[in-house]
Image 1 (cartoon, rainbow, N blue to C red):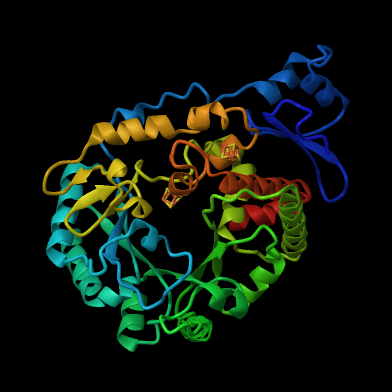
Image 2: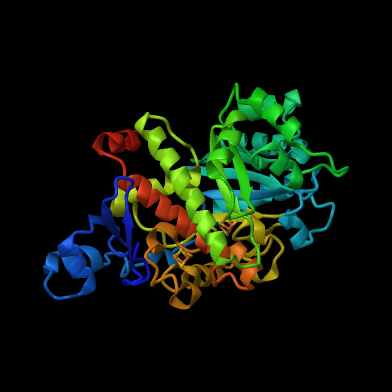
Amino acid sequence: MIENSLDTRVFPFFNKQGTEYIYSGLSGLILEYDELVKEAVSESGKASDEIYDYIFSDPFVNTDFTFFEEEPFIDTLTIFTTNQCNLNCSYCFEKVNQIDKSLRMDIKTFRDGINFFISNFTYDSVINIAFFGGEPLLNFHFMKEAVDFLEEIEKRNKVKFTYCVTTNGTLLNQKEIADFLISNDFNVTISIDGNQKEHDKNRHFLNGNGSYQMITQNVKELSKYMDITARTTITSPHTDFVALYEDLHSTGVKGIILDFVSAKDKYKKEDYEALAENLKAFADYCIDNIKQKKVIRIKNFLETLHSIHYGSRNGPKYFPCEAGVSYYSLVPGGDIYPCHRFNNVKEYWYGNIYESFNNDRRREFSSSHMVFVRNAGKCMDCWAKYLCGGTCYNAAYYSEGDSILNSEIHCDFKREIIKSCLYIYASLNENDRVFLDNIL
Ligand code: SF4
Ligand code: SF4
């Protein structure tokens, strides 16, 4: 592999069969790395203009970002339901935010909040309401009242609400809660960290007992009636991703989202080598499964494969997520933030439902955090930029001290996952890609 000896905006790689390809981080095209392409990349002048353009033309860089000037748009509202929790996880970020111990969303603030967003924001026909905590199901009575209220709103407005909840899974054995989630078609995401040993090391009750057994029992039961997603925090570059997937899959969850722990410590060279090796083994596992028409539902991989497969039709990623673009967080008291992880962080305050929404702040945040300008132009020169969009703002804020920078650890994790997805994609034949087309 000759990465780094080339223009940093292109990435050469081998597929499983040993053929070398090049991915252009400007046009989003994957080309076989033959003599003509090598000439184009080395700018020897012999390659045709057409090939040079395939690799180095960037149709996205001059995009007119008029949405910065527009009225605020919403498609997801996260509700800070409660900061109370019945677990005491070692990496919980709420402890970092130091939120007062007894905060709970009340139904009046919620109603006023929904009315505020419906009146002051534009939206398409669907708004997703995401209940978040702490452990949101500890404020179950509020969640029921909230859904009743939204059903009333649907009758009077051209809007439909969908629901999701991120929970630690410990309360899903309560029949009333399970019935409510099933009957309102909730998208349920449960935090589970791999196998029992890994999970119980970090995710334990206040008395120190692990929560794995209780949670997996609850997942087993509820997954008879709905698809459940696991959110898993990766704390080490030495993670065996195949074992992690198989452990999680055996609990009955359908999909998996990988989160990377935010840390100030940097990894060493051997850590990166281990990460690359583990992801390569996982990529081979994915290829073998796709060839047997089986899907490995890890969202981080499926989303990247989707972007590679659909290329420019899918549009590049200008941001890591929709925080502050179409995604907002509402907290008790009515304050609005671009993301639930910035709740109560003063620099990221966007306004209050009882005062006003600061649209200038939103524009300023989005335009200063897009991938072209992020991290003093470092992302702009990165071949992965349109598949990545930059790192989580909140991870950067806590690890580097400023959301405009990139969290180094997240950057490396993201780039390695993107490399694995390019390897997977280039190793598939036409039939495999037709299968992929149907599942993406
Ligand atoms: S965050 Fe890292 S991987 Fe992503 S575009 Fe920026 S430099 Fe590249
Ligand atoms: S800023 Fe980070 S935590 Fe917040 S929505 Fe974006 S990716 Fe998620």
